[in-house]
Each structure stands twice: as C-alpha cells, then as structure tokens.
Image 1 (cartoon, one colour):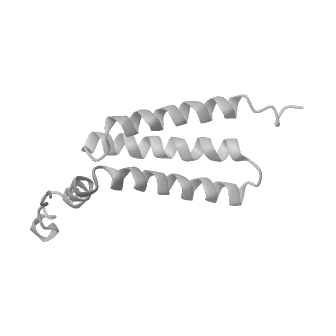
Image 2 (image 1 turned 45 degrees about the vertical axis):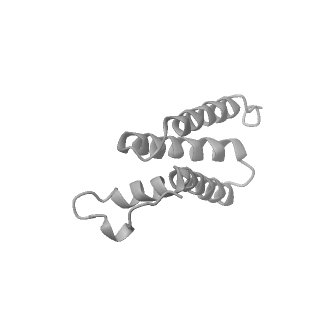
Length: 106
C-alpha cells in the first residue's frame, strides 16, 4: 500500500499548484483529466443551450478551450503528455467536422 503525504503538509503560500500536484499524485493524473473533461462538457452544453442544433460549433469551441487549459496544465506539470495529445486530436477532428459542415451554405 502506497502512503501519500498528508494534504495539510503542503505549503500553499509558496506554490498554489501544490494542492493540484498532490491530487494528481494520489489519483494518478485522473484529477486533471477529469477536470478538463468536466470543463469541456460544461462549455459544450452551454454553447448548445445558447445556439440550438450547432453541435459541430459547440464541439470546436469546447475542444479549443480544453486545448488551451491542457496546454497550460502541461506546462505547469499538471497534465500528462498523453492527455495533451488526445486533446489535440479531438481539436483537429472537431475542426475538420466544423469545416466540412455544409449546413450554412445554400
């Protein structure tokens, strides 16, 4: 059984990302991955509720915002490289779907 340090031992005054580093260590990077997923789903649903029936636009906006957040998290060491690669792939696919949408041209 792996013992982790107590979260009360983290000095948050020097490094505010210490709590996120601890959460990622305990959950094996699941915390940061699920945080990016939740933010993406919230943005996707918010875009869908404002612009009805624009799923390709919603997926593009959500994937771009998740890409920026995961890139910043990767720079800070909170997100793994595999997660960043998956988010980049999703952004490319959603961009291709958005550009191939023929609904707006008539």
